[in-house]
Image (cartoon, rainbow, N blue to C red; front, side, top):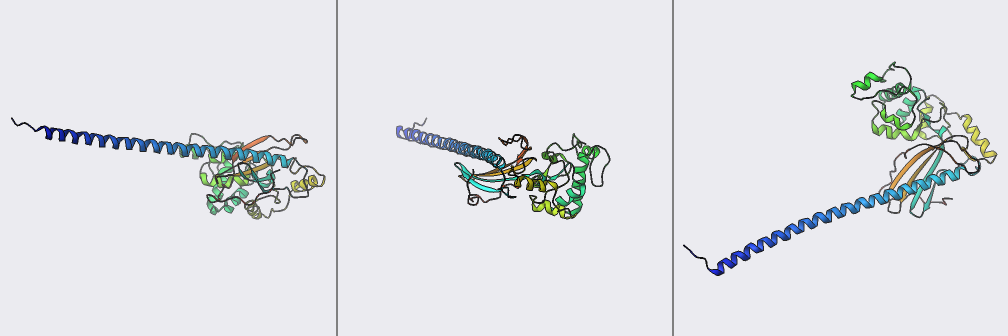
Length: 303
């Protein structure tokens, strides 16, 4: 039997202890790195939530500012929109337009909808098909238009629902129309409404895309709503008081975070307070496209 010298045994014990210490230090380093990573991710998430909350509060402030300005007597034909202003937590881009500046997806002709799709860059055959499917979604019959879709087409696509066969309640329902890509619905929303109940569009406040769609049929002439705006302005009344308005707000926090919302409000209900009923709210469009860290243009007074 061979005996080991005491020095050799002590050296082996020290080596094993050193390995154990190194392993423990490495394990603690890994645990520390994981904790640091989780803390960093939590901090980022908390910062995003704070910025989103600040942005939402700014958007709500912008909506209140817009409604307050809409309740004031109009000066000439200028509505005073859009405008940019600063609050304590950030900068606001605020716009308000009469709902008559938008194309109503419930009453507009199929050809008008197709022309709007074409103005947004959709090829002709696809534009006509999208318009037909919107028309099939809103009408009360089961007849399929050329390029359209009724219940059987929805079923074949694996959907558990079909066309509503009633007018759109909100513009967001466009996402339920078979074959409309989500990115196209997002691009379409800033130019349409479900609440004007008129096929006429007021060109005075319409966007270039809407005007391009109307010019296909030579229908760029003004409407009675434009004359109404003149009359309200001349009498010192509030602009757009008798019709719904769309208020769009884009907010940029002090750190550069961008967010936005668009809200449709009903006609002015009380002359003194200028109160309006909220009809629909959705994301603002087009979405903010400023580069990170870029600032909105120089502001004016909010009030």
